[in-house]
Image (cartoon, rainbow, N blue to C red; front, side, top):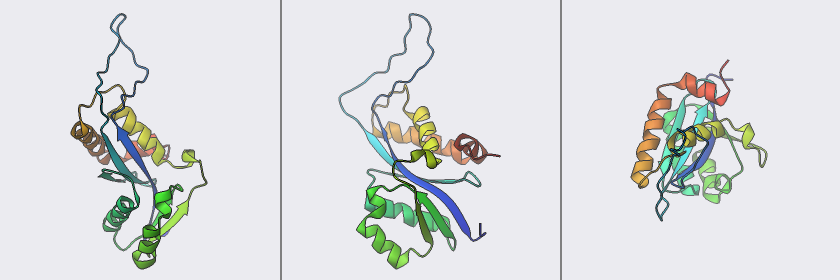
Length: 175
């Protein structure tokens, strides 16, 4: 690959306070309990991962839509100035929105999109990052509000930014 270009796998996810229960060990007679309440907070997250060096770029938002996707593309443009970004992504509607096409026509010369086949999340390594995130942040955990979720996501993001080699291992991209 050209040294002036970067290959990024991109996707978005939603972290919800739906209390995800996963298998876990507990002392006999002391089953783990996760409290619950009547409303569901959430955070949307855009992410891109470089499968060559484990570097990640993540962007928290209130919603995943075409406008917030454009915000993420602008953020990527700032992170990789003067580089061609080859983005591998799924066929979500927001990736094909009219405003995205207009943005790419006007100022998207630094982007090259490669769309994955429909219904093929197994081909996108960032899906494994999302699983790791959700296993760490929401599985068997109670978050009292959106701010609590954001703090947990921030701790996870700080952790992975310090350990790109672990990111590559988790994604199955390490040699």
